[in-house]
Image 1: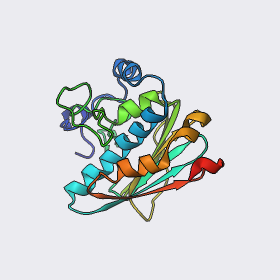
Image 2: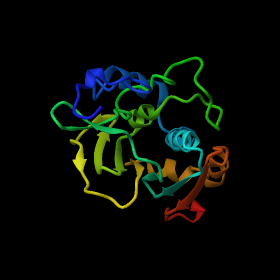
Image 3: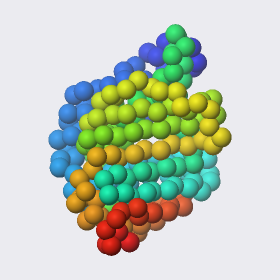
Image 4: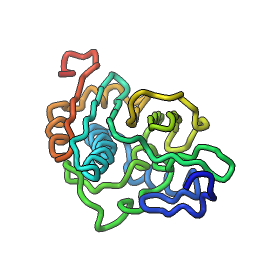
Length: 212
């Protein structure tokens, strides 16, 4: 698939032909609604579900580290990194998981439920609801980072240099501090334990005493 026309790349989870689907992001924002504690935990589950998918596909146990700060939540995994290819001009193109719909899940009546009982919608529903999201991607052939606001890229795909390990880091940024403070981390850990192919560590970096 390297150095070929994007339109020829087969869409298994996302359509590679477009970087941003503005109408989809608008619908996703409406669907998610205001981000409260329950929605925020669901968003973390949406991110972790991709790591669980990959670990299942590789028949291994993946490792995920979730760090909860006062206004940010980071989800890091040890997978292969998000699929990134070179187009006909040699430009790096990462699968547009943040800004276009996951065709397997979004707004489908047969979408599987995540551990909280809510339907899976895909990573773009997370990006669409976030004031800011940073997606870092480490693969064997390179590493890239990109920033999004409400699902729309605000920067180009930035080369982060070769990394010693592969994986993906998704940072949900500029979160409402009170909403993050109200997240029950014991409940979040319990929900995450339902992923059968992951070992998940949740670390609190919140300053409030209730952070534990």
